[in-house]
Length: 245
Image (cartoon, rainbow, N blue to C red; front, side):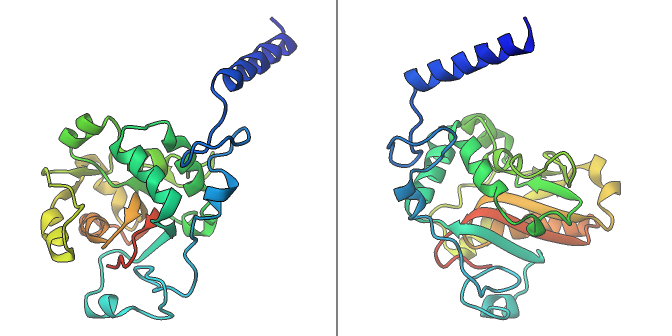
């Protein structure tokens, strides 16, 4: 079959798919155009995080270090999020993460891929926050890894899905106060032995879905810094209201 025949079959397959499964908004189910993730109404409710923000933890409303970062500087060097964890975006993230709606990950990864390239292009490695094997089996996928795959192109930082591991099982962070969150994940992460030599002087980008208090990414950053990483930055799709390091 020639190239034209193959393209014709591909077009027919796409047409049948759209006929049987019309594209729909991931949040409200309204009809959308091909390759659109959210309808205009839901997209309009996504709240980009406006400047100024704390240059370390990214807390909006601070042109310099926020009080929390001044009192107790985190192990990571900078954290950024695309939007507030609210409205349709929060609904989609919850459906993806807790309701096993894996197909939403592709659209969320594209959203994360819209982050300014300057936020991540200078790093050497991109590392998703890992899940413990028990939770990975229960969920079926690591949401942070799915999102991280939206970033690297043909040329750019290396995606390192096994750079970090979760060496002990922890209870979910949802519902815990900031102090309990820190205690829950204290010492929970480790750098894989085969990555130790490559981390010396490296710049690493940690990727996760939501930044709430920063306790989880802070523990990841501690492990990376102890293994020799020079700089650790954090990129999340969303930031919870009031979330800070």
